[in-house]
Amino acid sequence: MKFWPFIKVLPVRTHFRFVRLARVFSSLSVLAIIGSLFLTLYPFKAPCGGLACGIDFQGGTVMDISTAPQAADPAKIHAALQGLNLNETVQTAGAPGAAILRFEAPKGADISATVTRVEGALTKAFGTVKFASTDVVGPTVSGELLSKGLLGLGLAILAMLLYIWFRFELQFGLGAVAALFHDVFLTFGLIAIMGRFGKIEFDLRSVAAILTIIGYSMNDTVVVFDRFRENLRKYKSMPLGEVIDMSINEMLTRTIITSMTAVLALLALAFFGGPTLYGLSVIMLFGIGIGTYSSIYIAAPVIMLWGVKRGGVDEPAEPLKPQTVR
Image 1: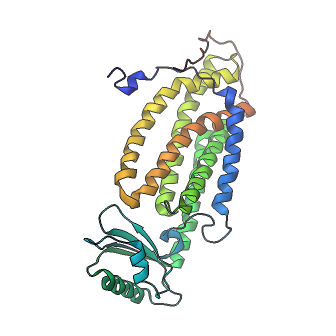
Image 2: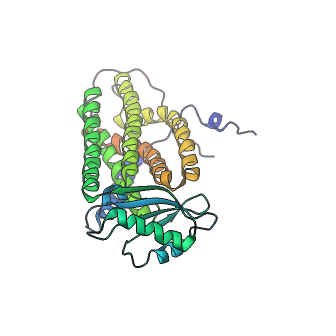
Image 3: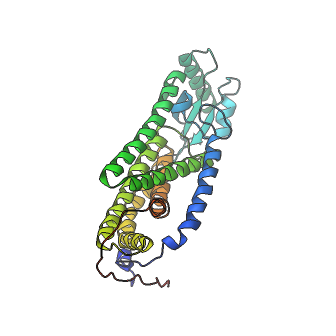
């Protein structure tokens, strides 16, 4: 029980030299962004490219079914629907016998009649089947949802740029937006990779998760920038890299503690929320980590490249001490 509670083990202030590794990590981030863009766009095929398009953006029908007490065997479900030409996918859920069935009605076919045929085929194969819900999204609606979802992401990033520009200075805004683009591109890369394994679909829940990541990342960046600006006013002649290191170290423990509260809640959603909330929680878990990283190694290096106006005499500052790793 020596190290309990864990929070008391964290140092009040760390002394890491973040700027020293800025070029290395920024270069790795550029490579990661290029790879994420390739995975997101390839194959260059509408509507979602390399992303596993959900029903919200692709159109089709999704049914929550339960074959309990029998197991919802995907192979048996595919066999029952063979010949209906539905291009269906089956995802088992956490509860016994629960599954999520997605399919597209054949071109020109009546959707209601197709749903009735599916229900009949499944009932014939399993005996008793419970149909909890059936959602149908047409191609016109799905196209509108996709365009509006992407428009919402773009407007959110633009609004963040304007806010940071107004709150701080232009170079701070550019650094914050560079960090936001980094977080968004890498999140799309995660969705693309996990979509290839059938784990995460790109749907409205994914867009909501990305928008939440944008807000979380911006909140973390604003906190660091605010401390950075205070230290710039206080230590006007200290090298810019040292001011950045000082500012990040002063806020690092606070960031870790704050992040853990969100991580614990999201871990619970990922493990116990079922397939409906799994993708959203995993995306947000990834976003919390990558948002903290981008505040340090994307936003700060942009400010260093751009520079800030400084002058005058500063107060004596406590020098940074090397961090001892135990």
